[in-house]
Image (cartoon, rainbow, N blue to C red; front, side, top):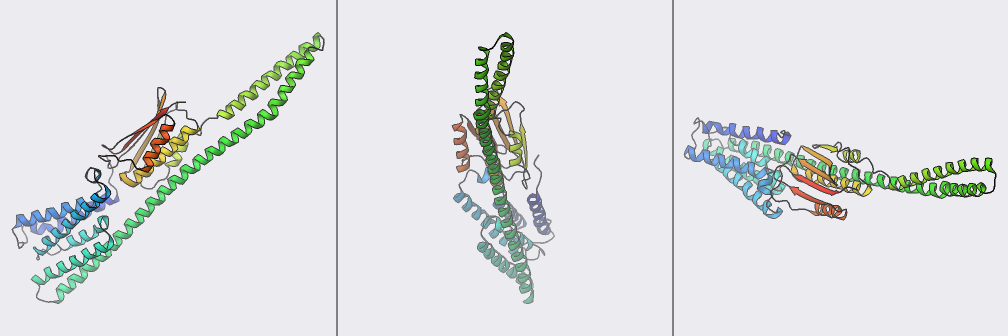
Length: 378
C-alpha cells in the first residue's frame, strides 16, 4: 500500500477544515438562505471540484494532452470558486465559513497562474465583505473581515506558490543530478576500456614480441647442441611457449574485458534521490558488456527521470535478470500510472538504443508504471 506523503496529509487536513466550517449548516445549527439540501449539494460540489482540480490522477488527466488538460483544470477550478461563492454568500451566519474560500485560494497555484490566483483572492474578498455586510449593520465589520481574510488569502497564495516553485527547482536539480551521475559512470567505463586496450597493446608489443624471439632462438639452438643441451633447451622452449600463451590470454582478456559492475553502476544512478526510494536487483548470472551496461545505465536514468517528473511515486524497483538467452530489465513504481502511454523523446531514444543492440521495450501504466526491456545476452 502506498504511503501518504506530506502533500497528501496536508490535503486531508484542509479537507477536514472545510468540512468542519460547513458542519454547522449541515447539522442544522445554522439556517442558510436557500433550502438546506440545495446548500449541502452546492457545498459538496465545491469540495469535489476543488479536489479534482488539484489532484494528480493519471486516469483523469493522462488521456488528455497538455492543452486540453489545462483547460479542463481551469474549468473545474473555476467551478470550485463560483460554487464556493454561492456556499458562503447563502450562509452569512455560519461564522468561520469564509475559510472555505481561503482554502480554495490556497489551491490556486496548483492549477492557475499567480495573476489569476490573485484575481480569485480579490473576488473572494469582495464576496466575504458583502456577505458580512448583510448581517452586520456596522460598516467597519465588513471592511475588517474583508481585509483580514484577504491578507490570509494573499499570504497563503504566495506561500504555496513559493513552495511549488521550490519543489519544481528541486525536481529539476534531482533530474540533472541523475543525468550527471549516469554520464560519469559511462565516462568512467569508457576510460577503463581505453586503459585496457592501452595495456593490451603494450603487453603485445613488448612481451609478446620478446617471447616470440626467445622461442625462435631456442628452437634454433635445439638443432645445434648435443643431447644434454637439447633437453634443457627443449624444456626452456616449453616454458617460453607457455609464457607466450599466458600473455596472449591476458591480452585477449583485457581486450574483451568484463563490464563494469552493473549492479553497482545502477545503484549509483539511483542513490540518494530525494523523495524516491530506488531499489536495484541484478541476478548473479547476468553478464553485460560495455555497450549493454551503457544501455542499462541510460535506461535506468530515463526511468528515474520520468518517475520523478510524472509518476508522483515514492518507490521504484528495478530488476535485471537473465531469461534463457536474453537479459530482461523490469522497472515498476508505485505512482499514479497512465491509461495511455505516449512516449516522449527520452523513451523513444531509449527504444532506439535498445533496438540497435537487438532489444526491445514495452510500457504498462495500468497499475503504477511498468517498463520492461530486453536484449540478447552476449
